[in-house]
Length: 348
Image (cartoon, rainbow, N blue to C red; front, side, top):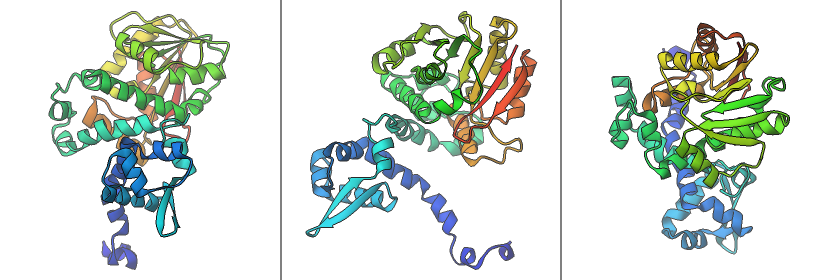
């Protein structure tokens, strides 16, 4: 094997060390978000000393200075020296994506990654050995009760909803424009959570009526904590596995199918097919693997997350196509957006 390595790789495994330390870099960003560093810097509108930041956020001076310097090192903050004092300020990227107040803030996504996903991944070895999620070991909840674990408290439910909301801040427009959906007048987003994706859809297709169908507790929390910007989107409560689903011309399943094993996916898809009239459609939104499952790397990581947290997996397009065809749908079209999530459209 050694003959295939460059001299620099033989002398020092830079790439391996970068991967080894990846979790530490993540925790630098997570910690800064949890402490409120980016919010403070955005609010101040001027560069601040480590001492000032530490005092405002109630931390040690030494710890905060090290954290701020690390953030400068990974190019999320900037620093300048004035009269021998280091003064820190946010980059445009930090202001746009890491501070709570920004319209494109990913703060909620980061909090969920830090406080929920990170503890689960500590049990990845057990997940691989056992072939099942680690909700019981991590949170003391039965492995088969996936959504009981995700919604185990109002605080945890809000963190999950914030994660989903952040996802559509980044990918929503690309998803709703992946295909021309203007022919569908009644659209129902099954498991649509906060309604963020539905709002993106309403902006692009203003003549369509759009309903978000989700569990009563989720709808109540969404209306209280994530007020919609678009009055064209309405909520309806129910469980799409057990309750009757609303009539629609297009059903949207965004990041739903990947949660479940094939048998449960087929049950849900067949239920949707039975509710469809000829010409009605279904839009799946998922992160798709390549057909050989050798990438993209981020989707492979997402699939490991499904192992450690849920009951499903990420899949290549052919598997989604097979499930859709098996339940009666045809004219399957696949669109890779080039972002985190892709789209699949099929019709009855």
